[in-house]
Length: 252
Image (cartoon, rainbow, N blue to C red):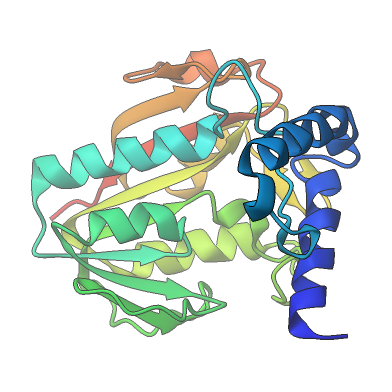
């Protein structure tokens, strides 16, 4: 099969699977009706079936977004802007957030699956969160957003390790410099392991994991997708799948 045919097949399969399986079925009649309308208006320049790229689930009343990732990126950017570190180191967070952050701050991004991208202000390296290629107490500004809940569950090719999250916390503590700040987020709510996607932690559990550090601030996205900054630790109790954002500092 040629590359063009493979792309066409991929486009049509994706249309029915994203954002969830078979969602595109409901948009197919509208797509066919609009195809006819557009083709009729274009006449001899009508689009070819071979070039079709159906987007069957985008006709919505509002712009959809993932509240966890949207708000945690905004939360991190505002704190980096407030503290203006010379360099910021990130472990495994959303690359979309980091691409924007690198416009104003030099960013070193470490990931188990290293990002293959080149951008001024952004340096990307491979790194295991259990053995980061960083000296002890060497990082003044450090982030790890929506990452530790995955460690040790095999989802991204990492080894199975029930203690993976706790060991990751120990390694983040090791590299953080005295006076440095750690920005960390993870799912909070009813504690459980959803193998092999992620874990959900109690907020108190995460505080205990990073106990040597001082909590400077806490923000929260609740089950309804509402953002609270600041938030109380008690507001995370009773959630099913919220996002807790913790700003920590290390004593000098």
